[in-house]
Image 1 (tube, rainbow, N blue to C red):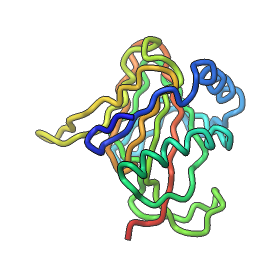
Image 2: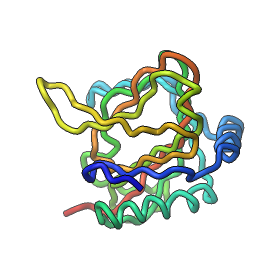
Image 3: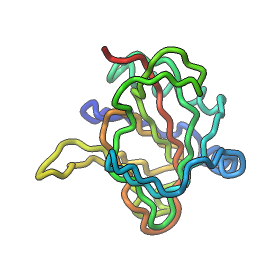
Image 4: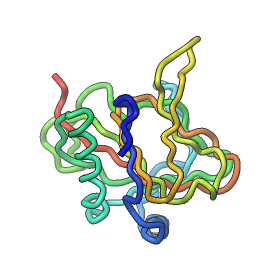
Length: 196
């Protein structure tokens, strides 16, 4: 594990390359393709162009969550209580996601996940499902500060299928435009009770 000034942690080989291919195939065939390809939330200044497939796969969650819990315990130590269904993101040439945070402005009760207490997204994770050599652009970047009203960024350095980046959901991050090939990732969020 590599710790980058408490901004994020990374692991390799969460899944094998074959398992990643199987996840892509399963997601394309069985995932809920619910979100429109183009997402524009002008209230948050967020713009995304990608295809999303939601996957309620408890076996995958059971594999991933221990990595996230360990990173949380060693780095941020926030209280966590559940993981949302996973999202497979498919970016092709021209697709991107502008600067955004995964956390919500205020706690919500997520009845769709059978929750009865308010919670917030606290920890986000992104797993590369294909190798960086299969596409150009499409870099996951996390904001490290601001200069002249622009974010300075640190690459998550997801180079190989099975690599995972774990970071606080309140961290501004983006996916740069894919200029060649196809990029597949598995994304998720762990929730916890409000901070105050």
